[in-house]
Length: 327
Image (cartoon, rainbow, N blue to C red; front, side, top):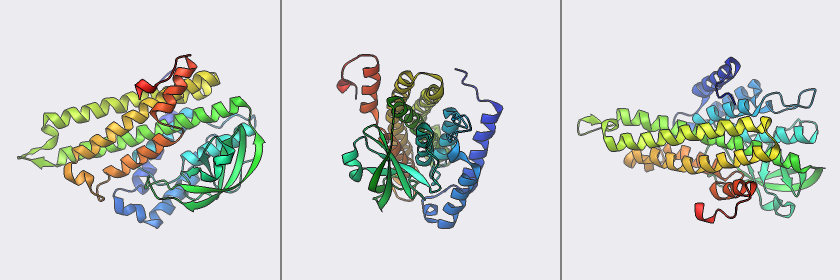
């Protein structure tokens, strides 16, 4: 695996960063700016980023999972309140099943049991009118219900309504969509960590106590250094997982993605809690953006499971027993 980005990947990363810098929310109050949100969503639609995993004439995706991860990381870094993870996974499900892309905006639901579909959650559902889910080895089309109380202020979740079983899925397709989902949520977690860390670092430079910037205090430096190490480690395992989606066998790719998700989920919570702590008292207030990063990390950690469930996948792949002692 070559971890260096190509010139095209660098250009993709920079273009996403420019859109988020121009249209992303810089303060909590801007999350309610409907005009800004509409412009950001229109820019994401026009870019074609949600269609990166749409099938080409040969049935292969237009872009690799690495490109998808690049977009997901940059959007999360700026806590962009435009849907990406949900529509991307929906496009991958359409490609894997050979079904025509829907004219309606789609997202995905979290459940593996058809009987539990009505109590499941459709995630990253801003602007969506349809829901896709993998239940009991089949692709299921469903409708959106009522919006749920917000954990992530940048990506709303909805109840799931009536369902229709559309297409039976082979086991490999289920593994592939799970692998991509884990890799993309890892990228979202990495971007969330980086965005929160940048916020805390800037605050540590500007905030003064006892006549000096708090960033000059050794205790604060150690906290930020530890958060940086966790973020960089998460980026490394995330990029390997994204590469593995298209480069390795389904079983090996799933193991890589599950291991990455366990690492990223644990790291993201630690990093986002550090971000709040560096801000001190203001970090616990609604006006501070720190909690927006933590909320986003909590949702991304929950999509397809956090530390424990994914350690179970890794250990099962290697024929090892329960991970109860490792959580």
